[in-house]
Image (tube, rainbow, N blue to C red; front, side, top):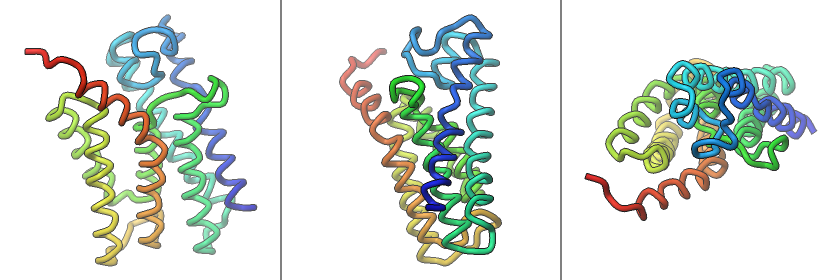
Amino acid sequence: MTILLAALAGYAIGSVPTAVWLGRLWRVDLLQDGSGNPGANNARRLGGHTLAILILIIEVAKGLTAVVVGLAIGGEAAIMGGEAASLAAGLGAVAGNVYNVWHEFKGGKGVGISGGVVLGLWPAAFPFIVLTLVFACVLTRSTGIGTLVTLGAVLVGAFAWESTGLENPWGLADPVLLVLLVIGIGLIIGPRHWRDARNRLRSPVRP
């Protein structure tokens, strides 16, 4: 019951349509204009870099908040209480962002909020994940392909982390849960980015 409550709390946090609200302040409709995705990339195209950065910061904060709320629900003392609940809340937040109940289960692509969840649960890996994502997106010229490449690299890193028994400064101490974190995020956001990557590969190459 605790795990379910944490997941629902995380979903509620992740589903708050902050990106849509900010877009309206900029007089743009992120759900109808551009790609129709209420995320930082579409916000940059429609409203500029300031709007995109604000949305990204808030999404990261929402992911981090969900982790903290999950930890409070589960209790810090118990491994299978606090850690599993914080993991459930984090994954719930990502699901709430991608499959938003307030927008007919349509939403963002989950990258920003996933970053906040990782920051809360696996902070040691966070800077390396960000660098990998930026490098992969620049190299492939596609956020979809870049995200999928990053997910694959992070999954390999999670298994390596689990096998070496490295310590986490805060967040998840159980390395098995770190692997489940990456797998869970991949299962939630992967399909959205797979569609983008497939469309990118099918589109004609521009000089």
